[in-house]
Image (cartoon, rainbow, N blue to C red; front, side, top):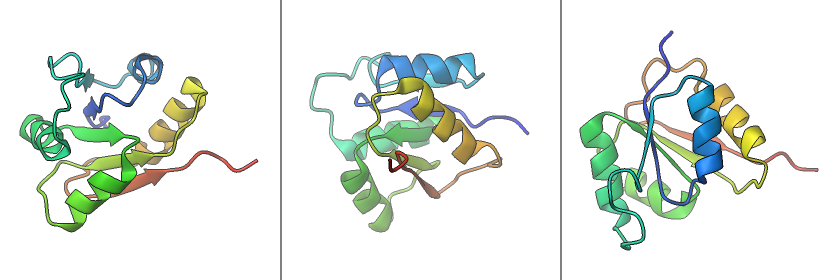
Length: 115
């Protein structure tokens, strides 16, 4: 099954992005699109991801869940809790996406394990 293409919000570290790239994901970042550090509105981030057919990966769970609940069109959203272990977070994202051929209008939560 092909891996979904991803779009990393600017709050996803480059280290997590690099681990996902090593796992074979096609991932583009907000920074690569020239929109980092500009207070780019969340609804436009989600629109960009949708226009590219990419699943958005973000730590901004509250705002993107709200946009989803309000009916925003999207190619999928992965809402992640913070985890300073980039390899572990990338592995959890990969596990959550491993059986997904498509994520259109779907939201997945990826939680940091409780110790």
